[in-house]
Image 1: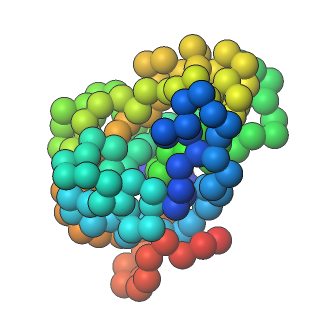
Image 2 (image 1 turned 45 degrees about the horizontal axis):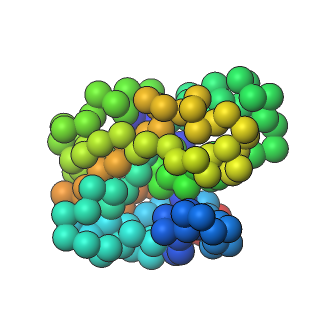
Length: 164
């Protein structure tokens, strides 16, 4: 699995907003994320949300974003609109449900598909909610502390969630 891009959002835009307007919390692209076992990603909206929370980190396939862009002829929306944390390439994310796996030395447990919500029609394109069923990404628990970095892991790089 290649880590293509990383995203962090300190606040909720859709979660808990049913029947109301979405929030306006930014999704920031970052160079790295600090993963904390049992808690999630430091600085993210779900960090320490509740014990054993299934969505401490979310993964989304770049291939899916590209296919959706082509299907809906979208050229002005990046993958950050899906509000997933890790954009991957070359991995079958659905196959990781129920599996322990490792990315750049950080261990995760795939818990379930990151099912798309109705907000995807507004955030990306009308029809995106239905088109994403079965390919909305992966929700996972963080099993070990570590840092995820965009692209190949850099040895000895200090810090965490450094903004681009």
